[in-house]
Length: 227
Image (tube, rainbow, N blue to C red; front, side):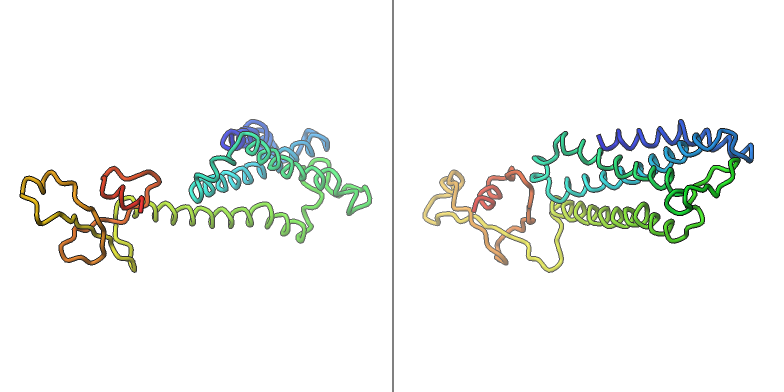
């Protein structure tokens, strides 16, 4: 659902914003009037912000799925996804307030932008543009970078465990099978023995440390995980 919401935001930009922007660039002036200009800018800012925030919640969803998959599986419901997507679009639509009402807030109802120019009334307010750029782009981007770095570290850590690779600073577990010395050779072969584990045994066979969610297929490893 997050990807669908992201696709809708990008589709709005491609079908509505870009064609009118192309006309504006080639004509050199805005021929559609103030009302259409404000609607166009509102759609542009809303869809662009929604696209960024959809990427943000998508990164959150991926991080929670990797970091705590079993716990997040019960929380990852349709209702939760719809709530997050709705919040994204509501926050994105807040751009309509400064776009439609800035000339009332700052200029006493007087428009400073010429009728043949389509731009926001706060285009020359550097402070407002810097603050909105930080919360609208740079802050979500920084959080997404952090989340994807942590996702990469977590996936790499799990891959090392699953492949049985040695992790620096940790000992590898080993095991050996104890048999009854009083039994004959055939009895020893039929005896299941007492499978025990030890660390650093001279006659032990190295076994990598496993951390899979399921039970190991090997019966010795299964008994070790149950201890």
